[in-house]
Image (cartoon, rainbow, N blue to C red):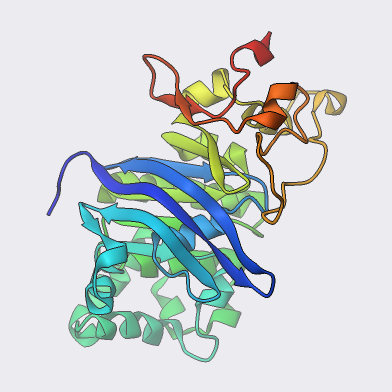
Length: 325
């Protein structure tokens, strides 16, 4: 049942991993919502917690991973508090997930056609009676029907990625989570897939969560973007606002690190330092050790996620807007 304008509501989620040294929290009180029919982007460096976000909100974070608090509501249903059977019925039919590295998500010893059949059989759908449905979804992602007779290793990286996307779309889900779907592909293939993701989203009326380390990708296709650092959101808002007037230094530095045609290489900023360790104890801003605009207060007080008055735009910086002057 469709309820309200939000497909997904993530409320106060904390999750992490059990280690020999104890539990390590990765996601810290994560709060965001995804509007119906939008492409919602999540961006950050490698090691910022993005893939943990993906497996947490799809509720596939298994031991040693653990979700310790909060709720994740899909159309009002808290998927953390339903039975495994109910969750299985929702997956693929209502929301689906395209993980990193297509080759790792495909069975290397089964032809592609049989893997489509497995998805249908898992949801009590007779594949023989839905052969046209499989071919239709291949047409949607611009794949020739001959791939059904191929093994994954016989396909190019771009073709394998299109196969995994088509599998995620097969049972007409409302929400699709894409975790680094173009990583490792050459620029032309990446551009082609991005164009098709946007086209498919419009044609099918999908809601998409697109997770990537490459902020420039999100400015091509996303409606709103959340910037994540150290397992927490440091800025979130409409992409035009983040692009034209970032409120957090981390967002600003990410933007300045993107190579642009016609811009001299020496004007590109290289961010200093490395992402914060999840095992570090830090009472202040997690970005303070790398921030060129840091003040003493930044290291002493952890900032809240604050909404800019009159805007759908939040940031986590106690020095905003002074750091921009």
